[in-house]
Length: 56
Image (tube, rainbow, N blue to C red):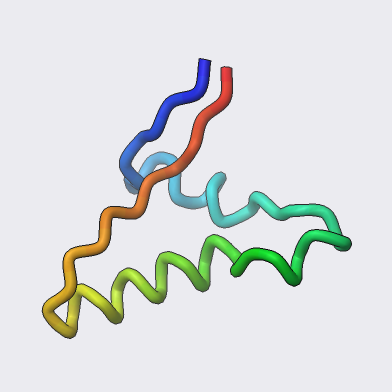
């Protein structure tokens, strides 16, 4: 089953360690970059909703 979960202090390190294969890296940003973008949005009045995708 696939679920979406909030990023927490408990799961953030595992999420930051995840990577896509080398030939897919140009399609998506790193998880760290994505979370940093969310932080920038929040500090500028935005309302991002970052989640971690869990499979199984």
